[in-house]
Length: 486
RNA sequence: GGCCCCGUCGUCUAGCGGCCUAGGACUCUGGCUUCUCAAGCCAGCUACGCGGGUUCGAAUCCCGUCGGGGCUACCA
Image 1 (cartoon, rainbow, N blue to C red):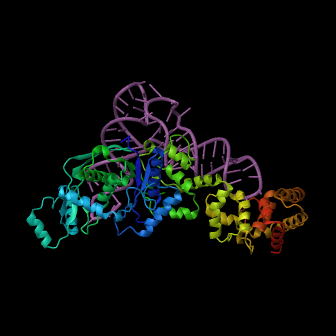
Image 2 (tube, rainbow, N blue to C red; image 1 turned 135 degrees about the horizontal axis):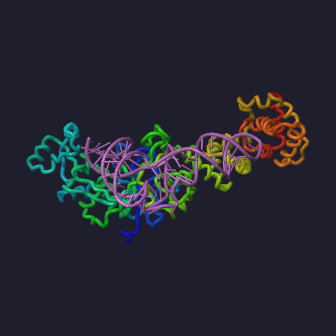
Image 3 (tube, protein in one colour; image 1 turned 90 degrees about the vertical axis):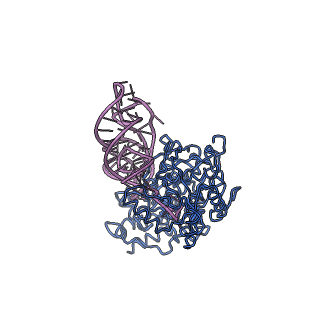
């Protein structure tokens, strides 16, 4: 296996928006492929047509792109092993199923869902391992004819021989399953469509996948997958390497779900999380570089990522830490990058319409908020005072410009600022400190709060003097004047 | 119930028999700084699930136990 070029696949079944757990898996798949200089293959497992929709498939593709997890083989980019949508590969699975039937590795099963359910019920009551009881394993021709005459539809079931399956999971070590607990499983539905167990195994072999890194929920399906490899005639040395990733769990209780914590990546995107922050945070869930490093770039991740460093125990998702990392990533952006990320949020919030002059002003203001926001969607609230045409003061802040001597402060500020020739934050600050703090003897906190509210409309704003500079002299004075009239 | 996986601060983790009176990060608390909010800096709180072994010595190895999770579909 060491000689073979690594090929890792991410193969989600888009029955909904990709969630945090899916993405973490995709990230590890991608990182491992990049780390080894191998191929990252993206495949859509849409064999369950009742649950997978085209929209979700499209959304999955978009999400991966947005995160920067570029694939080498898969939808849109193609590749030598396509198509990469299982729904377009149905004939392949049908051929293999037929081959298994011919080889007697598989057989037709005529049991109805009701009959199977009844069997399981019995087994539960009897406290024995539930599973298919092998009823149709060795049907005679006469029995088959009789079932057909009844009009029964058959599924194709794989025969599990007695014995055990042992494989080495790169994360968990050697794992053994006794076939007593791996009953004969269905490969093809009565309507002729393949099941996951058949499709994954066939595709992984045909597509030359060397490493299967996936969620640990699939751990116990591995013996079935291996059984299909055997039926396909694949040599044991050519089985892919398995590594089952631990779960990502929800904030409070167990499983990540819509109920607790938002799981859809689309939601994080709307909130203003950077893809790099999401990837950085997710990389730390179930993996660590081994030292104290926590702020990791995508580049570093590909350099450092190894399966050996992946944990076997599940991790809980912590929004607070994600926010902290997002804040770090925002602060690390250049102003142009920051602007590129932020402008869509400002236009969406209708703070700006996107004109050149607006964007020029945004770029001047961005340094003021870069270290005070954690998510991009906080930007509109902090910057809107620079763009509003009808300026108003927040209702809960009005008292700051009307009470406790605010009038005198504003009056004095208006007077002195009006006399100012050069309008820079340095000159504004010097003037205001001289008059309000030194001469009037006010506490900076008191004096500047009144001005802050008068000019920005809020008790929370970017730094005052810089804000006034960007606002301009006439607008600043107009707002002070307006506040004085309240 | 059965099979399988997992178990270090509240959370993510470092640790792979002595460097551990258990380190880092997030959160939280207090302080410094300060024009608000942040950022930054300093300090503090809190953990090896439990019980047995093995060993001169265990968070690290073994057994048991308890707890959590997954699977047990004509889902993936």
